[in-house]
Image (cartoon, rainbow, N blue to C red):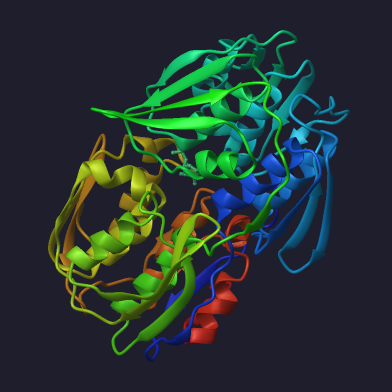
Length: 448
Ligand code: S3P
């Protein structure tokens, strides 16, 4: 079972400019999907650049427990021999997903239309996150479940022995829910139709097509619908995982707010449904350019080049939220160093992430002398300009990697050091964060 490790506080303080090449790890969303779809294909799937962080490693262990063969050949290089759609085996152990909402929810989808019982569990953060949003629509396929009050883990899921195709509109702006339903549909005879208002990340759709699933995406006046044929036969694929824009956002913002900095971030995923942060920072006056843009296995990638910039506050369009939903903690930090007010709305989903991220961001900003107004679905940050953030605060991370990384970046440009109460959970998404940042010139002190 998930053990909660001892906490490791860290302080970040101002030093010289950050310079050099920031190599960030493989994309977390694509890494989970590559392991899961590889496990549902027949034959050998090859993956290069897999994110070898705790979240993804939990998914790898779960797929092994469900009967797939997964072999690590070297850094980020994996081979997966799948069981075929409908071929996953009942696990004889509890599936422990650690901190990972994506891993757990996607695997729930993969299990829901195969006759088996599986128990899903996770760490203290994951045990607080809502699972009903996935479990309820999975019952339409014929699955049943039991969970703690409020749809919380541990969850026991009984996959349908005679699944049926469904038509369902996903009300929440969640790619995890959409993806879970698409994975469940693979083993449901007939054609399933999933629609959604929000244009959430589309990696599952793209990768399903690469594995040979039959699916069609139709634009709607308000959103889109995906039709997918069940009883699919997935063939193996060869996948190069691009680098994660959600991890890149931390060194990227550090380059913007630490005077004199200049940084290159090679090979970052530039899927338009993930790159809202770049557009937003550019609107704030950030000097970010893209070089060597190209296509890699159906995804756009490119090198980001960023230089220290005078930022200004803006109104971030709420409809852009799905394309940068994980980037609000670091955007709020950038906003603190801007001149003027930055208004962010449409962020109700932030309340159910690894922590109540809105509350955690607001508390962290206030602890470091930044004025911020919190509403139910957003915040307005009063920027203090390039040299105006006091710092000296202690930030409570609530087992949330992105809160930890965002406030460490704040400390690199604040007047006094910023301390985060724990950094162990950064290993869930970006294990080399500290090393990469130190390599660029960042000043961190352990245990202060
Ligand atoms: C993810 C979807 C998002 C995002 C998460 C990864 C995915 O969650 O926050 O980090 O890989 O599908 P929601 O689907 O809950 O919005």
